[in-house]
Image (cartoon, rainbow, N blue to C red; front, side, top):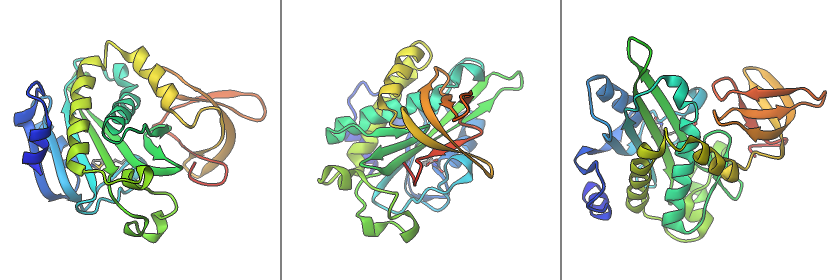
Length: 265
Ligand code: BTN
């Protein structure tokens, strides 16, 4: 896998020496956080052919079987306070839409805040995690992405079968995990330069990609379920929701997630 990915990366890809591939890890994010604390440089990338404990936002697990998906984590070291990275997950979402489009010719949508969606099915997810220095600045950002490339519906466990999909199911053609991984690495290398200076344009693109906007949504916050209408996403990635009594809330992704009125979308 490593050689085929490296052969797909152009000579100007800056982090060729920092790609580490494994057959199986508990979680590429957890592995990379460990390396980050030991001083690994920006651009360090961990790719696993499968994960036994892949996880997502809010403690949810991420199904990571061998050979059909890309499970990738990449380390960035932006020099800024954490408040300057509120848009990180959204920006990665846009970068991953670019990567998928470059490989498949079709652009997925993003279900707020971090799900990549094709034809009503989740084909990927993003988990960004920050480490801070003792004085409260960003020490590292671990960007974890899982993308389902070539599963068939039967490859998913029964409880995911109506929700999950793969790129090949969406576009009706095989999608190579190695090609997808190379495209994701390229997109993340470009994003590392654009992340801080181009926040407004990244968020403008996020609003175009986000399929949650202008829809009725169910807002999930702990045990609480509330229905509202998703109006906008602000430049920090918060979802602006208006409720039936007319009041509005900017909902932070750390505290809530959304569903459609009758299911996942
Ligand atoms: C989500 O759906 O909430 C996000 C899923 C993120 C999964 C990826 S797979 C690679 C990396 N390692 C993990 O344990 N999680 C991320």
